[in-house]
Length: 357
Ligand code: SF4
Image (cartoon, rainbow, N blue to C red; front, top):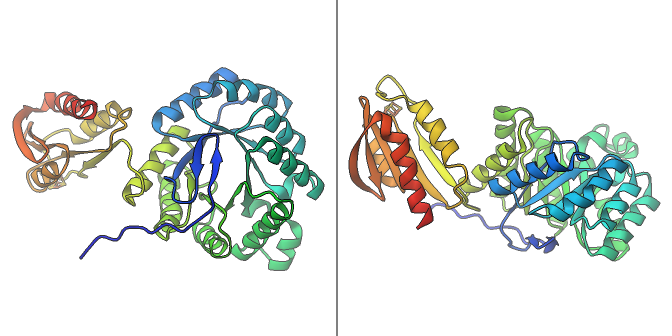
């Protein structure tokens, strides 16, 4: 039986800075800074960490004038394109557009009416940048809530279609759409339906997904189900932790679906009574030490001879543990025996070598 490859749904191409989104472009990984935007140094430091982890586009909250002023310098010094995230105050959207934002994210439902939405559209059109219309189940218009009774997927789709029609009527096509809910099944249903009726590029994510484990599972399911159906052009995993973890989780999702590879995939066992080495600490150290490698490599760290040699042989580099020792495999070949205390060091050196060649 052959493994399926995902056929991606056709969408329109837009750009955020130089980064292409949609129409078959690699799925773009985004994250959002959680520093105070006014603190330019801290925000830029975080954007650099995100970029190093593989983030393609960073989003920065612009809640007030101070943040809008800081945005100018952030945008100038950022190594990756920066999107300004605006709620409530359309003037901040216009200010950041004039400051050279590579894109703005607004929720037209809270921007203060259609005139103000139109003013943001005009500014974006003039600057040649894209808008993300972010529909969120938590902030749907009153009229839709009255019609649908609650923030249902249908209500979210209706909201998005109203806004996209508004932009299209003004000759503005440089936009992408998100329809997020903290409910995974509602999110999936909304994106599915919207993608059936629109070819707008989609920014996919589950909003307010939660802390690391819960949020990663919800995001992996929500984003993963949609990507598996070919829906989605850019993704953001949203977690209540460091945004660098969001980027790592995003790549884990993309790698699992074979949509985009970057960095080291670690195959490690959960251990059991047969394990003869301190596997958890070895895996933790290997993961940390290899976190800056960008080459897509598979590294196995296994506890014993039951599944260890098999997995280690299939990996680019792998170790199968024994009692206080291990054996090293490289590209399927057994290379040498290792003492437990040298496993991490040797494994990491081998992977770094392979990555640099
Ligand atoms: Fe247990 Fe060995 Fe399997 Fe690890 S590889 S879970 S130690 S049997």
